[in-house]
Length: 388
Image 1 (cartoon, one colour):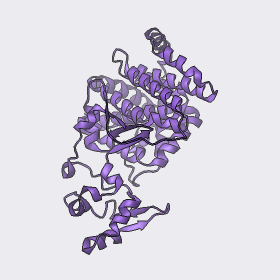
Image 2: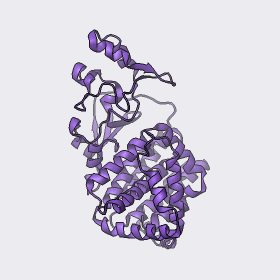
Image 3: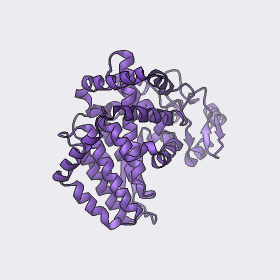
Image 4: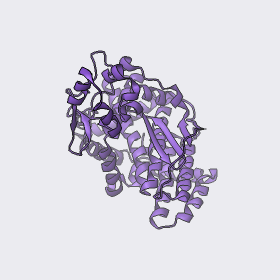
């Protein structure tokens, strides 16, 4: 089997109790059947404790009963008692893998690390160069999947390559790069919807031409000067995210605080517009971090469209996630008078933990992005081209 990973994956190492957060709190962990069977055969006091903390949830999955927000096996030193007593091989699948994620397509496995882990976020955000990917091979055999069309799979891989290549074009402003790939995927989705799959290659060829990219950039200028429209649309974005499911009831992303502070009067609107301009100047040497976020979401989610042919919603997950993280960054900067690497890591990891790791949130967002007017491509392009 071939294995593709971002090159930064090799730099990851869990820092355990030194981490500012713990992956053993804030979410429910499903115990896979193999691990559950193993735990039924652990003897002694620890085995009894293991079994006493396992319950069946409403979906019929075996899960640990949380102690407040914490896993019952998280000790006072923020270390895992199961790891300590039984070793890594006896952790459940989720705990063994985290923060790694994985997707398989025939004989190809793609792996990365999740932004929800603070240490992983530091590594992802810290790369100020082009994000590279490495391909290796092991002795495992891939699975066949009758649900996947190999030709479409190859088409989608080539589309993703174009998206990432455009996002890495540092001679173009980041907002323009994001708008261009959004337009590209809109055209790909049109071909899919009209069953013109053979036409996708011509769209790819067009977006591979520098002359066409230049035309698009010039066309994007017509969207500038719409700061008020952006301001009103971002208000709707925050309401959408506020109404999602969250890992706790304490408004972990501070969405209600943002809505209270920036959407109460016309004066708020002017402050919002001015502060975004100031932040972009303040943070100009670090804007590559938002590019890294876009590439992360594209690599992680775009190829999932092979299962539903919905490339548009996957692209919007990437774009909207980056927009929301940027909005939260501006607010943090206003509140603190500065914006540090610690702030950026905190916002990214909490966004991922609160939004990305609840599968129902991703499903809800994909549906909303494809049905509500405020998430139409032109509306999102306005948000991007006016002080993204």
